[in-house]
Image (cartoon, rainbow, N blue to C red; front, side, top):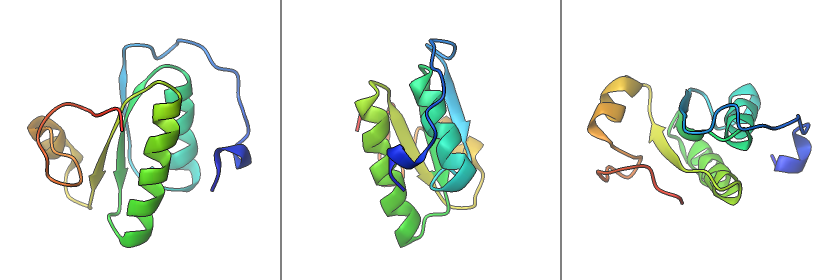
Length: 101
């Protein structure tokens, strides 16, 4: 799904300086929510199923979020998002802060 297929809503700095966690963010409503939050100034945690298709979709979306000047981190799987966030783990298992890519 390209960003052009998502209706463009008005943007603001409503979420500037905030981090938003969106579950089911690889497609559909979750994807639209994640992109709109980024367009409104938020950094975004992209939680997704973790299969080959959702990994690809989230990688594409991370590029879209980066083009908006925001940061993102992807977390795959059905396990608790909270524990991954507390550990600072991305899909690849790396430690650290959100990346711009």
